Image 1 (cartoon, one colour):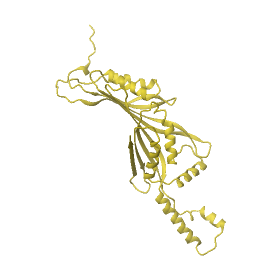
Image 2 (image 1 turned 90 degrees about the vertical axis):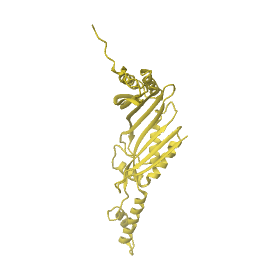
Image 3 (image 1 turned 180 degrees about the vertical axis):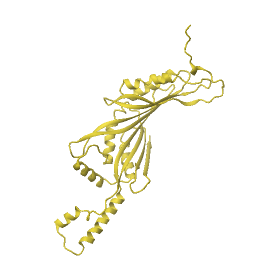
Image 4 (image 1 turned 135 degrees about the vertical axis):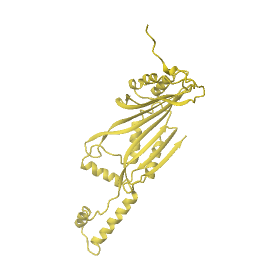
Amino acid sequence: MVLGLADIAKQSVGVQQQPRLDWVGMSKIHLPIQCYGQTWYALLDAGVSLDRSDVRGIHMSRIYLASARLSNTPLSPALINQVLSAYLLSQQGLSARAQLSLDFSVLLQRPALMSALSGWQHYPLQLTASLQQGEVTADIEYGLTLTYSSTCPCSAALARQLIQQQFTQDFSGSPVEYQQILAWLGSTDGIVATPHSQRSTAQIRWRTDAADAIDRIPHLIDQLEQALGTPVQTAVKREDEQAFALANGQNLMFCEDAARRLYQVMQQQTLTSFWIRVVHAESLHSHDAVAEVSWSR
């Protein structure tokens, strides 16, 4: 006689006054996803609520199997909606809400500023979505992290002042020739101080009802980086490094400046809400300089 396999999840907990569970599922599921015509490695958190107080657990393997759809079809809001609907269908009578969080990095090829070199830049993305039983469309939040360089306007002004003081000390009271000044400007005696710069990050989250929201992200990245003016580089030659130094020198910004620039770009998009957090990892201080701004329709 062959015995059927036990389904422990269907067992009663034995006590009727157990709380409902907001989320039960799996974290850091490894899977490939299809996006922008390429395959990306992603981590998935997937789960549902457990609304029955008399049931011991959900059918977790069914959620895992339903998640396979994310690997077989190009990523889109419609696909995410289908997957969440499948989660709920797999837990009929147990769950009223399904949710997932998908973390991956998009690789975009970026040209050098001056030379013919190019390299791959990575952009961490996060998609968090939830679907309530009876609703047609999932609520999706998109998240993006950008890395860029920021040069402090205050330190730039102070550095210029020190250079002026050094010039006065070296040349005061004597006639100065062009070649003499040119040589002085190219020496460590002349440029006695430089402004401080730091690697900086911008975290941006937004919501939109657009069906092509994921397809728009590379263009959005281009717009945001253009607004900042100093995105980090990949492969460089000396002429590229010099051009980057020039971009920093002509594009001084506090964290407040960066947040406002990004705000202007996000306001031009078709969104229902967005949130921005800018962090400048200070090279002067051991603490960070931070600015946040948000908007909702």
